Length: 222
Length: 154
Ligand SMILES: Nc1nc2c(ncn2[C@@H]2O[C@H](COP(=O)(O)OP(=O)(O)O)[C@@H](O)[C@H]2O)c(=O)[nH]1
Ligand SMILES: [Mg+2]
Image 1 (spheres, each protein chain N blue to C red):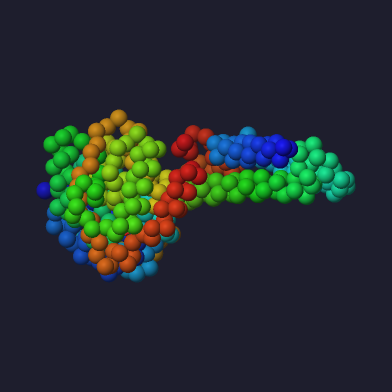
Image 2 (tube, chains in turn brown, red; image 1 turned 90 degrees about the horizontal axis):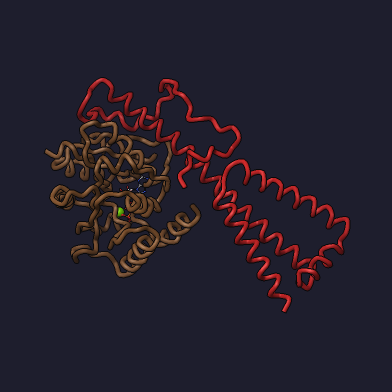
C-alpha cells in the first residue's frame, strides 16, 4: 500500500529524532528519501538504519535545495506517483498525509498544500501566527494563489507537477517559490487541514521568526 | 528649491541602476558595468587634476558643495556594487548547488545499482562522498562568467 508515494524529508542535524520519525512514517509510507545536508551529527546513518534512502549533499545547501534534490531522486523511481514533503523533526503526521491523498484522489487534484489554519488543532504562538499570516498575505499578493498557509512544510505533489518544479531558492524562501511555481501551472490544487506538532524539541530547533526578513529579501532580490 | 532637482535626479539614477542590475544579465550588462567603472576611474583622475570641477558640477546640479555630490555618486556606486556582488554570488551558488546535487544523486545511484528496489539497508550513509565517481560530462563550462540567458530561470 502507498507504494507509489515517496516522502521527501529534508534533514539537517536531527539525529536525535530522525530514526523514530522515519520508522514511524514507514509504517504507512514505505518509501522515504532523506536528503541530508551535511549534518554533523550522524543523522544520516540513523535515517538509513531506519530504512530510508539517504541522499547526501557534500556541503550544506539549505532546505530548498534539499527538497529539489529529493524531487529529482523521486523522479528516478518509475513507479512514483506522489511526492510528499515531510519534515524530519517530527512535526508532521502521516494521518494528515493520508487525508491529503484521499482528498487529492477524490477531487482529482495535482497538489494539496497542508494548512495549519483551516482548523484549530495547531497551537502556534501568537507572534508566529502573525508572521505566518503576513507571509501568506505576501505570497497571495505576489502569486495567483489564494492560500491560508503558504509556509507549511507538508505538501502532496503529483509526479506530473514535480517534473515541472525547479526550486532555485536554496534556503527558506523556497516555500514561496514553490507556491509561485505551482500557481503558475494550469493544474488543480487545494489545501487540507494539518496538525503541526510544536514539540519542545521542534520549538527549540525551529526557524527564528527573524527569518521572515531574510525570506523577504531573498524573494525580492531575485 | 534646487535640492529637489538633485533628489529627483539621484532617486532616478538609483532606481535605474538597481533595475538594470536586477533585470539584466549577460554580456551587455557586464560590458555596461565595466564601462561604468572605467568612467568612474576617469572621472576620479579628472577630479584630482581639477579639484574645483566637482564644485562647479554641484552648482549645476543644485547641490551646495562638491563633496556632497561626490558622496552621492559614491552611494550610487556602492549600491550598484552591492547588488552586482549579490547577483554574482547567486549565480555562483546556483552553479555549485547543481554540482553538489549531481554528486549526491550519483552517489546514491552508484550505491543502489546492485539491488533494484527497496532502500539500501546497509548503513553506509555517513561515509564521505567518494571521489571515485566515474567522470561525467561537465554542465556547460561558462568561462566567461555570465551564463547564457536560456539557463537561468526568470
Ligand atoms: N536539508 C536541509 N534540511 C534542513 C535545513 N534546515 C532545516 N532543515 C529541515 O527542514 C525541516 C524544517 O526545518 P525547521 O527548522 O524545523 O523549520 P520550521 O519547522 O519551519 O520552523 C526539518 O526537517 C529540518 O531538518 C538545511 O539547511 N538543509
Ligand atoms: Mg520544524
